[in-house]
Amino acid sequence: MQFTLRLLAAEPSTRIPFNYQYLLTGWLYRVLADADTAYTEFLHGQGYQAGRKTFRLFTFSDFRMHGYEVRPREGCFVLTSPIVDWTISFYVEKAAEVFIIGLFQDQQLTLMNRHLRADFTVERVETLPLPPLTNVLTVRTLSPIVIAEKDETGMDQYLHPYDDAFGPLLLINLIDKYRSIQTGTNNGDNVPELGDFSYKPLTKASLIRSRLVTIKEGSPQETKLRGWYNVDFELRGPTEVLEVALLAGVGRYNAEGFGCVGVSG
Image (tube, rainbow, N blue to C red):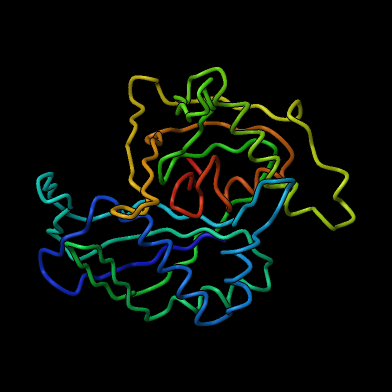
C-alpha cells in the first residue's frame, strides 16, 4: 500500500535540515512501536531475510514542499508555505492496511538535530490507489535510488542509472526482496531468475540528477550515500515481483528513505 500524509508546519518559516531522511525513519519506527512493539522489533531487528541480506520492505518519498527557500549556510530548507506532502509505502498483507493507515491519523511529527527543530501535524492521510499491475511497470523516482558495487578496495562506487551494471544490480536486489518474502512458504523454491526481468531507463541521461545524503549525521556511524533522482524507468518481469518494487522500493537503503517509486504516466 501507498499513502500520502499532508503535513502542516507548526511555525511560519519552519526550517527543515537537509539530511532529514534518517530522522523520518526514526519517527516511523516510533509510530509503529506505539501500536505494535513486536512488529517494530521484527522490522528493526530481524526483518525479512534472504541469505545474509535483510529487508524492511517499506520506504518513503522525499518531502514535497509547496514553497521553500534553500539556505546552504544554515544547512536547511526554510518553508514559505506550511504545507508538506510525504508518501509512505509498505509491502504488507491487505488485512493490515487499514490498521497501519490509522496509526498516522492526527499524529505529531518532530524533526530535530543538534541545531534545528521542525514540528508538524498530520492534517490528513490519503490512500493512493494502485492501478492493475501487469508484467510491465513504468515508474518514476519519489526519492533517490542507491545502486552501488564495491571496488577493489571494498568501497562502494555509486552507479548512474545508465551504467551497464545498474539494471542487473537493481533487479538482483528486487529478486532478493521477493525471495525474503517467500522464505518459509510453499513458493519458496519458485523464485524468478534474473533472465525473467529487464530494466530500461526512460529519462535522458543529461536530465538525471544525484544527491549526497548524510545518514546518522553527527554520530560515529555517520554515512554519506549518493542516490539518483528525476528518473523514469521501465521494469519487465513477473507481476508479483514488480509489486514488491512498487511497494517496498528499489535499490538499497529503502527504510532510510531511498528508492521510493510511483507509477508514471
